[in-house]
Each structure stands twice: as C-alpha cells, then as structure tokens.
Length: 206
Image 1 (cartoon, rainbow, N blue to C red):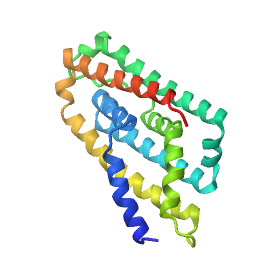
Image 2 (image 1 turned 120 degrees about the vertical axis):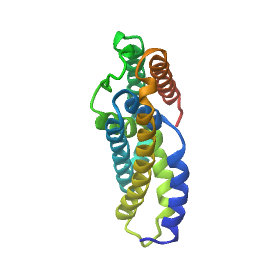
Image 3 (image 1 turned 90 degrees about the horizontal axis):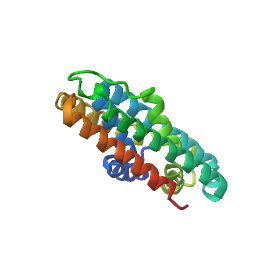
Image 4 (image 1 turned 30 degrees about the horizontal axis):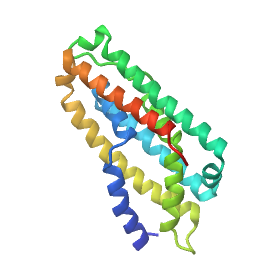
C-alpha cells in the first residue's frame, strides 16, 4: 500500500505536522513545567488520538458527527472546555509561589498522555478534517480501514518525532524559565493560548 497516494499524503502530513496548534501549545506547556519525558508522553497521547479519528473516518462514523448538529456541538464544547481548563491551570500556576522556585519540576496538572489524547479526540475539527482528507488517498480497491490506519500511523509517527523535538528543545531551555518572571511569562503565554484556542473551538461552525 506504499503507492503514490501514500507519498502524496506524506508530503501533506509533513506540512500539517509542523503547523502549530493546541497540540504544540500543550507539549510546550508540559515540557516547560516538567521536562522532556512528560512532553513526549503528552505527544504520544496526541498522536494516539489520530488512530481514533482514522478508524471513525473509515467506518463512516465521522460522517455522522459532521452531519449531526447536536453531536458536533456537544463534542466541540467538551473539547473547548477542556482546553480552557488546561489554560486556567497554567494561569493559576503562573501566580503561585512555586512558580518562583528555581529548578523545581512542576506537575502538568494531570496525566500527560491522557491530556494529549483528550485534546485530540475531543476536537471535532480533527474528525471532520480526517473525514475529508483520508478518502482522497484511498483507492477504490484499497481496504478502507487498513489504509486509513496506515495513513494515521504515518501521520502519528511524523507528529511524534516533531513534537519530541519540540519537547526536547523546550526542556533544554527550561532552566531559563524555571523561576521568576520568565517562568510566569511562559505559563501566562501558554495558558492564554490554550484559553484562546478553546474559545475559537467553541465558536467554530460546522
């Protein structure tokens, strides 16, 4: 199944992978707070969510989501609320006394893998995107589910590699953000971005 369609998907997936979004912000947030290992665990959760979307797309369930106004609204509000909650956690951390303790590893406020997974799975825009994208790279004679999982696996591997690089880069510089005003600024920035992304998701129309 490694045909021209797959190669075309790889090129498109590469562009999608390096485009910043909620996943990148979450990985930066957790890597800065608790180090590269936690950031990579977050990335693993995010990339695992792609398989769920690929399966739903292949089975046609994403089509139900896209055309069901109630289901779409419920899922997008749940995803938006989760992003806002993560953002509020960052803002609370920014103004906590522990923020000024140099070298202290902070808790990301939950299990990083689950945070990444929920951020991805609760985003109906990703489901709709996979529904529109994957069929373009599946030929008439291809097994839809297997081909969808293959494409999701490629996208997931690329995403994990990229987010791991981001996590390691943030972790390398986390000492500069480990205390004082810089730590507070980083938490405020990531918190504000997550809240903004959550608000944008909540206002998204189908």
